Image (cartoon, rainbow, N blue to C red; front, side, top):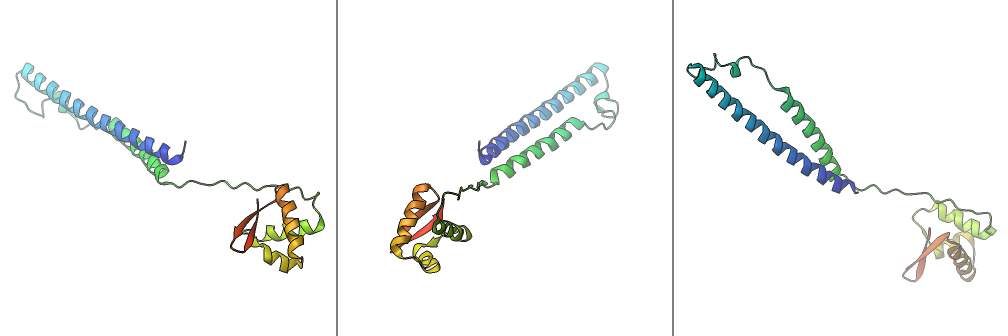
Length: 161
């Protein structure tokens, strides 16, 4: 699963949990008010917050606070994942150069040093090889899976595979 999709699912779950928490806290407060009113009516006292046992003390319920912090943290992770970019894993390919001829190895090393590729005509100039011989050598390297040629106008761009 992609991180962006997972992040969106986490955000959706966080919003759902947050809505349920708000509903739960609202219902809990309503029940507390109803219990307070019922107690005051049964005891025959006026609705006085100072005498009502439901309003005695200023105890803060830590459960909603801790769960809100936890939900916010998880939501933050979801936002981070939703906004993150894909990471591309580039694997280095190992080449067996033992079966290559001297000129093929020279071309391979030249391509290895030029990571973005090099034009076929530049290889001819640097190694002082004729165009025909260069084409044949590059054909062999391409068949063996070492290089790839891309047509660029009147010349070829040669890249390592």
